[in-house]
Length: 236
Length: 401
Ligand SMILES: Nc1ncnc2c1ncn2[C@@H]1O[C@H](COP(=O)(O)OP(=O)(O)OP(=O)(O)O)[C@@H](O)[C@H]1O
Ligand SMILES: [Mg+2]
Image 1 (cartoon, rainbow over the protein chains, first blue to last red):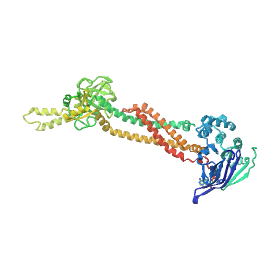
Image 2: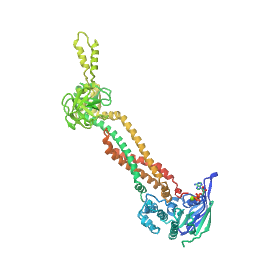
Image 3: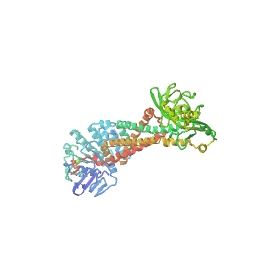
Image 4: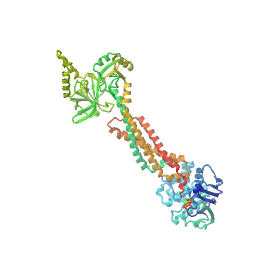
C-alpha cells in the first residue's frame, strides 16, 4: 500500500459558478514517494491552501485524479464514499498552530486518533507513547497542552499526524511560529519520520529557513504547479 | 474510546459548576412551586380529614361550606341524626377573618365547633399542647402556624378568647391557620353588628307597626330577640356508622331535607377542582415560564461553550471524528449541566426553600423524578441549537487560509 505514495494528475478546482467563479487550481500535477519530503511554495493567492484541502480530502477537485497508495480517491468528479474515514486512516495533518485539544492530555491528544478508528484505549496510548521518545516529549506525556512550550506542542502535533501511520502527511506552514533552530529541528524530525514510517510528506511553506532543505520542490503560480529540484542539503 | 464530554467538563469544571448552580436555583424554585401546589392539595385533604366528617350537609344548591357561603338552620342536625346509617352529627361554622392578639393581626379561619367530646365532627383530632375546649364560651384552640401560645388572649370581633390548646397542620384550603372556638360564639361572631347598628335596627323594628301592634306588648320583644340571634350554621358534619354507603345516606338526606349533601370524594373535587383551580393554573404558568427560562439558559450556555470550541471541533472533524460523536459530546454536556442543576435544585428546594415558605410545601418524590426527566429533556432540546452549529463547522476550517 505504501508502495506508491500520493499522486495527483490534472487536478482543477473552481470555486463558485458563472461570473463570480474562481479557478483556484488550473493544472496541478504532483507525485510524492513514500519516505520523501517535498516543499510546496507559491505566492499569496496562488492556490496552496486549496491544493492542501484537496489533498486532505476536505474539498473535492472539480476535475482530475488523485491516487493514494493504490487507491483511487478522486477521478474526474467521482470520489470514494467515506472521505471522513479516509482522512482518519490515511492522512496525517500538521498545522501552523498545533491545534491540540485543550481538554485532553498529551497522550490522549495523540491516542485519540487510533481510538476514533476503534482501537482499544490501552493499545492507542501505547502507540502514542512509542512516538514520544523520537519526538522528545516522553517526559510531558501526562501534561495538558496549555502546560507545554510552543515547540513541545508542535512536536505533539507531529506525533498526532503520525500516530495512525498514514501514507501521507500534509503539513501547513509547520515552522512559521518557530525560530530557525527549532524550524530546522522540526524539518529534521519530519525527514526522520518519513524515512522511518515510509510516509510521503508535503510541506506548504513560505519559510526561507527551511526551503534549502528540500530535495524536491513544487512551485505553484496561478493554480499551476511547476516541479523543481531543490538544494536538498542538510539531511543526507 | 474516551469520553470527550467528560474530559471537557473536567477541564472547564468551574464553568459547569457555576452554571449548574444558577440553573439549580431556578430548578429549586420550580420544584418549590410544584411543592406549593402539592401542599395546597394536601392542605385541602388534611382539612377534610381533620373535620372528621364523612358527609357535609350544606344549603341547597351551594358548594359550601369551604368554596361558597352556605347556611342551614342550626336545628337541622336533629332530623339528620335519626336517619339510618348516621352515627354522629355536629354543626359547624367557618369564617375567615382577622384575629387580633395584642398588637398583632393574624388572618385565620375561625371555626365554630359544637360542645361535646373529643372526636365530635369538626373538632381538632389531636393537640400538640394544652387541652380541648371545655367551656361553652371564650376559649380557643389555635393552630401553631398562627403563632399564638397557650394562655394568649385573642380578640375575635368584640370578644376575647383564651388559647387553651394548640394544633398542627390545621389550615384552610387557602393556607390560613384555623382557630377553633365554641359554636355559639362563632355564630355570634358571624352575625355580630356594632352597637350603633343594633340600636338602629331596634328603632326601625319598633317603628314598624306590624311588629309593634297595639294590644300585643310581647311581640316587639320577641321580634327583636329573633333578630339579634343567629339561628344558622354553615354546615352539618355527619359521621356514618360502618357498613353504610356514603352515597346512600347522602341520597336519603337529600330527599328528606331538601339540602345538598357532599361525600368525601365530592368535597375533595370541589376543593381541588374549583377552590384552588386558579392558584393551580397560576402555578402551572410559573412552571411553564421557569421551564422556558431554564431551557434558554442551558441553550445559551451550551451554545457559548460550543462556539468557544469551533476550532477544536473543526480539528476533530478533520482527523475523522464522526458527527454523531460530536453531537453526543454536546448532548452529554447539556445533560451533565442538567444533572448538576437538578441536584443543586433538589437540595436547595428541600433544605432552604421549602422551610421558609409561609405555605406548606410538599415535595413529592414522584414530582422530583418527573422533574428530573423534564430537566434532562429540556437540556437535550436546548443542546440542539449548539449541535446544529457544531455540525455546520467545516473540517476545512482547521486547515485555515
Ligand atoms: N472558498 C472560496 N471561494 C471562492 N474563492 C476562493 C475560496 N478559497 C480560495 N479562493 C480563491 O482561490 C484562490 C486561491 O486561494 P488559496 O487560499 O488557495 O491561496 P493560497 O495560496 O493559500 O494563498 P495564501 O498564501 O495567501 O494563503 C484565491 O484567488 C482565493 O481568493
Ligand atoms: Mg493559504
